[in-house]
Length: 115
Image 1 (cartoon, rainbow, N blue to C red):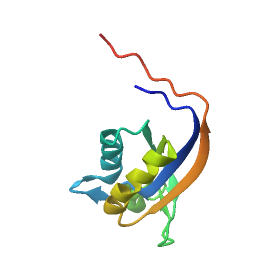
Image 2 (cartoon, one colour; image 1 turned 120 degrees about the horizontal axis):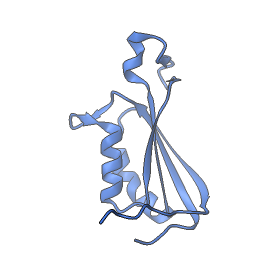
Image 3 (cartoon, rainbow, N blue to C red; image 1 turned 45 degrees about the vertical axis):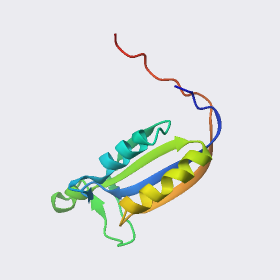
Image 4 (cartoon, rainbow, N blue to C red; image 1 turned 60 degrees about the vertical axis):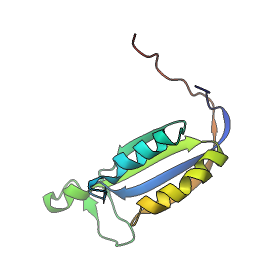
């Protein structure tokens, strides 16, 4: 596997924890698609509170709104690979926010696989 270093592009996808794509959690499907596309890596972060375009606050402090907490999926790779992946995100994300940031990768090291 080639290690990513230097200039890169970060895509962050903000969606709701309960958002689905083909009856499965959207954030899980984004990570799987990113892996299938051979991207360098993806991580999912669960928020404890937030709001989006609807201005409705989702928080773990209220039981009724704790089932749809904000989730951020962060993917980093070369600009070419990230831009090639954007149409897949467009197909999957009906509601949410997708942002791109330039970044620099200073270290990208994986774990050794168990024998």
